[in-house]
Each structure stands twice: as C-alpha cells, then as structure tokens.
Length: 210
Image (cartoon, helix red, strand yellow):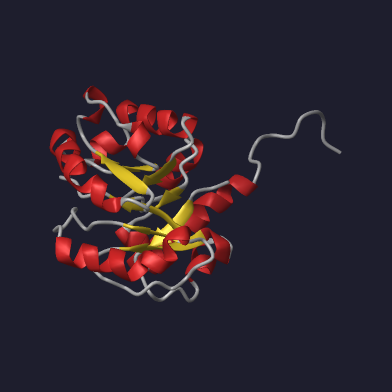
C-alpha cells in the first residue's frame, strides 16, 4: 500500500483530489506549532512535537491530553528530539518516553543514529528526520528496513516532491508529511502528476506492427 499522506491542516477539501488519491489515504499530522483540532480522518493521525522549529512542552502536553480519547486512531506520537543529533535525541527519549505510556511511541531518527542502538522494545514507530542528506542516505534506508522487518510503523518527514515520495513508497514507508504538501496546491499536484506518469508504458511494442 502506498504511504499515507499526513497533513498539518484543518482544511481537507480537495486535497485528496489534488494528490490523486482517495480520501482514505489522507490523514492528519497534529503539531504544537499549529495546534489544529482533530478532523477525525478515516486514515487516522500522528502527533509531532514541533522540535524542528521549537519544542513547546506545554502545548505538546495539551495536545496529548486533548487527544487521549482518540488514541486508538493515532499511528504515533513523536518523542521530543534534537534535530540533527541522534545522541541528544536518545537522551531526551530516555527522559520522556515513560510519560507516554499508552501511546504508540515514535523515535525520531537523526544524523548519527546508525552508530547508536535503537531500543526497539520501547517503540512502536520510527520518524525519519534529520538533515536532508542523512534522510535519504543508506543509513536511514537501513533503519527503515529494520523497522519494517520488526513490524514498526515508519513515517518520513519533509516529503514535498514526487521523487521523495517514490523513494518512500519503494521502501515500504507507512506515512509521510511535508510542509509544502500541507500548504501548497502546487506541491500536491506535482505529486499527482508525477505518480500518474507510471500509468503509461513508454517502451516500444514487441514484434512487428500492423
């Protein structure tokens, strides 16, 4: 199944059509940065921590409290992280994960995670973050493959182009998000147009012609 699109928005009108997918493939990413209310999408939702811009623990905790009754539809909650530093992120994980009991917990994987252990027994998902270079590296691919082999949910952030989306699809990623996908029609239609190209066969026909 292709990755779900999790959009940080509260206005979903026409977005699935612009992406060229059915309504059931578009869910919601809830973050402290925008604080949008849950739109109760069929595709479910994830909860990010907003650390890419600024981690506001009070707002993050408020979202968790608000969404407690909806936990069964939540694919993951991203434990607080330090963008670009796997070591600091793991330290934050040790501090915060006990307070996320009952939620499906995601570890935000960052630059350097390839040299550090992942406590697979404590997490339900991985969120592939970090720098752009690391995000599409062999290191992140290995983590994605390991997560899938262990039955963990895999989410990739900052997916705003068709090439990145195809990369995620090839690796069996479960869901993606991107600021551009959430905010700009042009990004969504580029995804649709790029994916539709696969429906055509440009190879020469075999054998003679009539």
